Length: 570
Image (cartoon, rainbow, N blue to C red; front, side):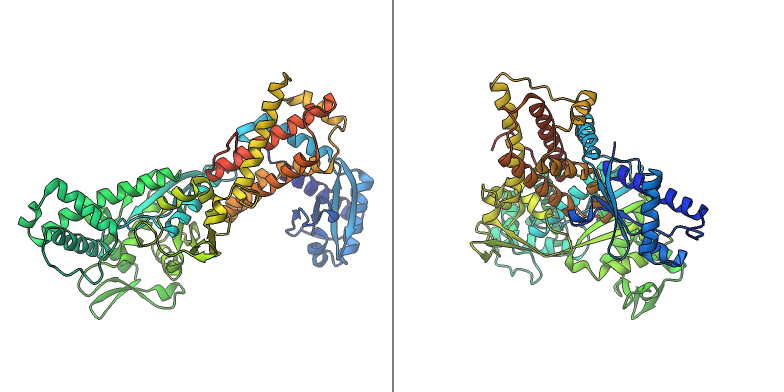
């Protein structure tokens, strides 16, 4: 599991630090410690392949001008040949950057690595087996999944995949909100629809769920039990109705998410926290630690002690715990199960909940920094240039299943992760359905299909299909057969795939992989449109076939991370 970019950065760092030690020994620079600095890839090619700010951060420690430090470091690296990389030149630029211009040879090993590691290229041990839980979607099981749930599903599943690729032990979890006021309202709604369906003129509850799916559920129930629930007490009737409907709704949610490519390891019931006394237990524990008080008959959590603007009710005056109390118990349960890091993906309406939940974890003695909460912004659905608010089928919100019926799973997943979670997303239905280069997911998949077509054409011509690998490929590349800028751009982009996964894991940013993959597809299309692969000189054909196979491998891996298919034909 090799990260070519990280290896180059480490090699440059070694050369820089050796240079500083030599300069100190020669009395040309004075310092006690080397401050933290970065070796990074400049945004523009004219500034080299890699650059460092070392000289600028050393200025205070060494009491010298940054450019003077940079010139000394650059000079000693060249003089002593300290850089164990094929380098064209090292330049001092701007206020004191040191820019490294590498020869293409460093990229040749990248292609050899990609073809050696194949489906494992990009994997790393960044997480070192850290146990991470990613909880996402966790929609109320009182209705169908909507656009916000769908975005959370794509983001959460892709993030979990990124973490797996970077050496974390990941558990995907769905928290079933099957307790509390929403379930009470659900029961009242079901009861009203049940009685109405049997000819009883009863009002619908003000806080009830108005969806057609509730009516459909009740009609299916009546086919099984008829009017037998009329004989039950209202409380028992609602209990039976909720039991039936929750089972049905949860199965529908499971089916929709499975169709979307999302499979959970754990489905955790909120109700179990109440039934096992865990909610009461956590309220008591917070009280023992001095973080609760009573006011107006209610029990309050001292959220202000942890930087929140106001304290929060844990148990209402009527003795019923709040959702917040159950949520604290749930998060305590997560850490008690041994998760070293807990990641939640929440909707924008939960923004105010973040600080108080972190505060509650701190109050219980857990590290609040081990809890990451991603706040996901809203989705607007567009069709024909206008916002689409309602479903044509149900007259309500557009569901995840309807979206997949319309644009397919691949386009839906890509569109949901192509923007940062903290940015609003405008989902263009018309664009997602287009089979053209305007549609980013089509553009990416078409690049993969084009590569498959190249190998089909080769087979049809009776050409040798075995792609060069290992020393045979390394030796041929050493002859400098790949020299075109489009070829080198592709190699450079392949080199950065493991690094992109590492950055996406560190930043909890799935959109980085969506952007990377689109850029790789663009570079391939540019190469393909300008250069032939089959029918050129024998050595050139061999290395270009290896190159396009390398691109194919990385496209497949990147698409797999995002849960998107890699079609062979379009």
